[in-house]
Image (tube, rainbow, N blue to C red; front, side):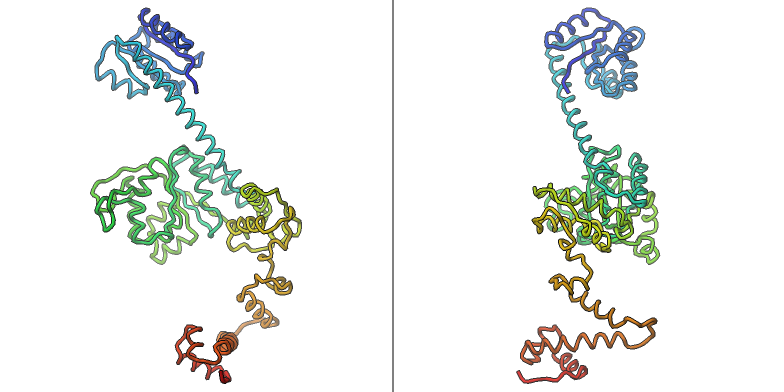
Amino acid sequence: MPLNRILVADDEESIRWVLSKALKQKGFSVDLAPDGRHALELIKDNCYDLAILDIKMPGITGLDLLDKVREMKSDLLVVIMTAEASMRNAVEAMKRGAYDYITKPFDLDVIDAIIEKVARARDIAGQVTTLKQELKERYQVEKNIVGNSAAMQEVYKTIGKVAVSDVTVLIQGESGTGKELVARAVHFNSERLGKPFIAINCAAIPRDLLESELFGSEKGAFTGAGERKQGKFEQANHGTLFLDEIGDMPLDLQAKILRVLQEHEFTRIGGNQNIPVDVRIVAATNQALIEKVRQKEFREDLYYRLNVVPIMLAPLRERRDDITDLANYFLSRSCTEMSVPPKRLTDDAQALLKSYSWPGNVRELENAMKRAVILSNDPLLTAHDFGGLLPAQERIQSGSQETSLEELVDLKLRACMNGIEALDKGDIHAMVLEQVERPLIRLVLEKCRWNQVKAADVLGINRNTLRKKISELQIEMKRG
């Protein structure tokens, strides 16, 4: 953002003349005003990069004019001039939003230094504005959270409503539904854009380390604390702190989080100083927090502090209309990231994707697209490129190697139970275990040449337990 046009307002003609000549020699366009009223009219009608205003002028003073500038054109930088080098004038000018303050008489070198300083400030401001716009575009809801289902439309509406405020948000949904994406969308569409977004997974950090990660520690606070460490709250100051999987947070730490929410301050481990902090909290969980409250595993007061605005993310199986859009989005992104030619999903592939239950939700769908892009050389991805999603029966019939033992057992049990209309109390559990244990133990014994000591070691059970099982299951022993 180059510095081009400057306004000089002073009731002394000699000052106006000197500044005008000096600034024009440096290539700037300069307008002059003999008092505050004329200066105000010029500011209303023109766009200036800098205004140099005398503090004492007839009609409207420089400080009053500064107040009006802040209201009308807050991005206009203002430098205040005065012949009275008093602390009161300097403090008052800076309090009202002046960029800088100079006293008369001044050398032109001082003006040169201020112009250079203003030019650097405008460059930085331009870079920040550009970065903010890039971040906002990058995290636009419609670009990063895909889906047009009714459930997602409600999520979009809520994000739009809460983004402009500082209310605490609680995002709830199964693992893989995109809770962090929603948290980022809230942050990057808020007034805290350009400030830190710090995320911490409360379930991924050991309990004895989580407090230090959140609040930081003083040097010598515990063994290994060789220097002062900033915690996530300090790092997120003026920005947003995303507390993922907050349902796993220990009760003693929940009390400290509650204090930060109430008092807007915290204390490092090993410290005694209260540190003020301005942080917006967005929390997320894949658990039913209200149930944990009933079971006394989560603080009720913290729950209601966090649950000011709830956002519920439905699992993918409950918004199947979004699956094709999501799949195409991840497919296009994966091809771009891996520098491979674009690929397309066939109708049978789309049908399979829509019929699958997606227990891992959006994250599982994204990984399925990446895997298909890596493994397939064909521009068309068919249902066979997603063999792992085929029902177990189809995979068994096609000889797929991806069928798990659990799926095979499940398939067999379903076949055995066909025709049973009601399940009464009985010994079905013992019967199934017996039928699974007998072939397993017999197979291991065969592989170990009927050596019971070795077989017990392979099975991970005591030798006496193995001998008891052999007897109970009536397994005929053979010589090794």
